[in-house]
Each structure stands twice: as C-alpha cells, then as structure tokens.
Image 1 (cartoon, rainbow, N blue to C red):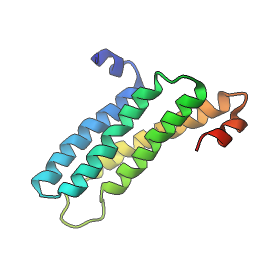
Image 2: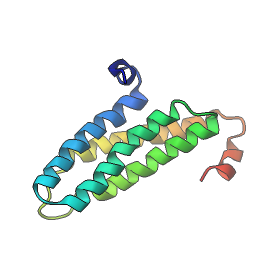
Image 3: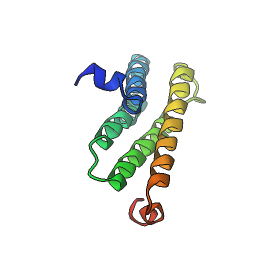
Length: 128
C-alpha cells in the first residue's frame, strides 16, 4: 500500500491515523494485562479504516454507503471499548478525541452520499 494513497485521501487518512493510535493504546492495555479489552478494541478500532478502504472500490453508490455504515458501526464499537470511565485503565482522551473526529467525518460522508442520490429514499429500504 502506498503512503500517498492515505495522505491524499482524508477518508482513508483519518481512520488510518486512528488505527495507529489504537494499536499503541492497545499495547498499553496489554502491558497492564487488560487483554480482553485490548483485543476487542484492536479489532473494532482497526477495522474502521479497513472498511473505509473497502468502500473506495464499492460496486455502486449504495454499496459505498453500506460499507461506510459498517465503518461507522465499528467506530461505535470502538467507542464502547475505550472504557473512558473505568478505573485502572490508561488515559484514553486522545483516542476518544480522534474517534470523535472520525465519527463526524463518517457521518458527514454517509449523509452527503445519501443526499446526492436521486433515489436516496429507496436506499433506506435496502441498507440496514
């Protein structure tokens, strides 16, 4: 994968940067022996970018929206696993802030993509 692809595409760069941040945070969790949370967060946090990448080669606009919605769902799961209120966990304010930014971008992409479609009202019947 070429670095230029991520640097030139904010849809890919933001989730990729978040993934790198999550990898580091999960390493801290593992050092603190929080293995289960680390695994769950690692999976959901890194899959946001993978789904956004997949959306770049979508077969249709509906498929693009669907893949971006999956990325948004993974972002919601990552939010859950960040455990911002749990005792004895590393500080997660930076990953939380970056995730907030990712969520805003994903939400805007999804809503804009739906509005641009002349049949956007039909998409809601086919995409969950």
